[in-house]
Amino acid sequence: DGGITQSPKYLFRKEGQNVTLSCEQNLNHDAMYWYRQDPGQGLRLIYYSQIVNDFQKGDIAEGYSVSREKKESFPLTVTSAQKNPTAFYLCASSILGQQPAGELFFGEGSRLTVL
Amino acid sequence: GDSVTQMEGPVTLSEEAFLTINCTYTATGYPSLFWYVQYPGEGLQLLLKATKADDKGSNKGFEATYRKETTSFHLEKGSVQVSDSAVYFCALTPGAGSYQLTFGKGTKLSVIP
Image (cartoon, rainbow over all chains, first blue to last red):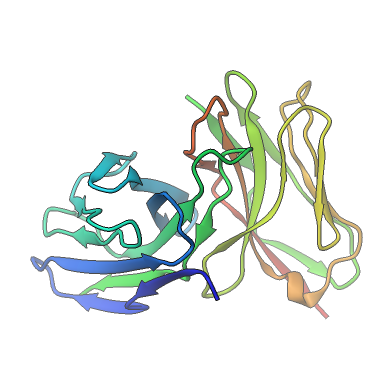
């Protein structure tokens, strides 16, 4: 079955450590996204990419980095510069050119806890 | 900028009760509107959508009508089930080729037997 796979599902990190969250999709979608979800705050966009080797900052990119070396993969690195990294992270993808724009397919998420 | 405002939860209903979750938006142009649902421990799934004024989106017994005059997209279901317990997010994309979604804060629904 086609879909989006995020790993790990749960991750614990010590302060000062960088961690990388994996996101892989086999839907052949061009666009991929990373969102952060905090209780009572909804989803906030971290980064997105519409094409390989290109990506744009979202609303809360500080302290995060991404790469898009392959169409299928869009890993997110949470760096030590991120002041409050404990959150639920969601990866999503979409087809470019579809109408209406905005229908996203989500992975099951990765929960990061900083100890 | 664009924004989405949802009624605050949590909402607790008995099984077979009528559900309304209010959603209003602020956007320029002609946005497309969406409701997403998140079941416990999972990612989000698209529940329904509407692309222009007076469109009604529907799925799994849920409905929402795009009301441009009141800038609203309220979610309704006539008879909720325990399995409907989830967090519901209203969202918009501004249209004009934009692929970025703006989400509301979510409304948690709990349905008790």
